[in-house]
Image (cartoon, rainbow, N blue to C red; front, side, top):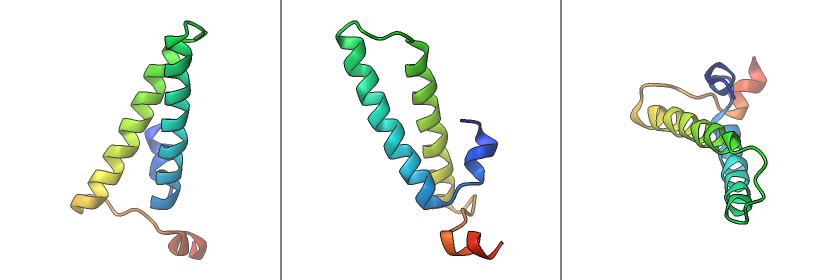
Length: 76
């Protein structure tokens, strides 16, 4: 997922996306350990997406970025 697309998400959506990616990463790691992984590049892509989300959440925590809430997004 591109960084620009992540910036448009609310904090709740980012947390939900992160949870889904972590679950997918776990499943891919299980496939890798069983030597059934078809696309090993997918592991790297998912890890980087998780890192992008963590960066946005940390920037918001430090006050460098303000993420929209679901209520603010409805107003727009």
